[in-house]
Image: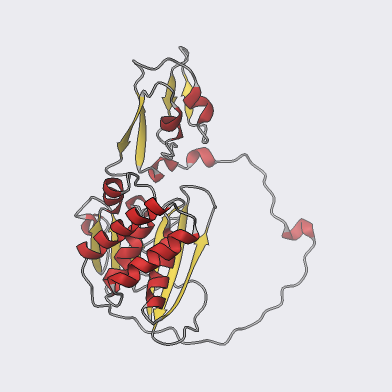
Length: 298
């Protein structure tokens, strides 16, 4: 059995990447199982998706902690304890990271085989947007495991992207991205760990507790401001204050409330917490906000 674990942020399309790998394997004649696990379900928050592929019927259920392959859509997740993408990685694990940094294996002392691919750059080049990398990393997974023919990858991309109602033109571009990733990477021999034996399920009975004992209580104010969500960002909006007409549109539209106004009513971005949704860039009526790609987000 091949166990692939995908890590990304909400909006990267890791659920779809897992489905692409599972569907391609199914079309190839294998049994497949895929599912996502969400934490805080919001754009930019870490999510994990799981795909199992096997010649035999798959009787395992639920998440797995010792993957054969780990796919990471955003290198800023590597040091994020909420995502912990390197959990269970051993000398036998193959890790694929979407990044422009070549020496990332040494930077993070990652065990096993590490390959990098600039999936965001490919999506920018072919699709014109780099936020969703589902086809790219689904294609990468299919290539690495070495058992999926390119035709079945293409059919899987088309099927899964049609299911989420993507326009035909965008589907064609995503297919091109998937094909490109498939061609860039090479299959790697997977060194399986030991299969997890079935274990009997023990049922326990919890005694009833009154709500005063069993309900959580909040006794202090929130601490969300201490969480630096700026590390989730792939692209950074930059305001040209010399050309800004102080219309406040970016300030009003910012969904995270990270744009503030100074005493002269000029907007300023809190980069510690800006997630890079780029709504300010889209809405700016005089187009004085530009976009820069983050090079290293840690």
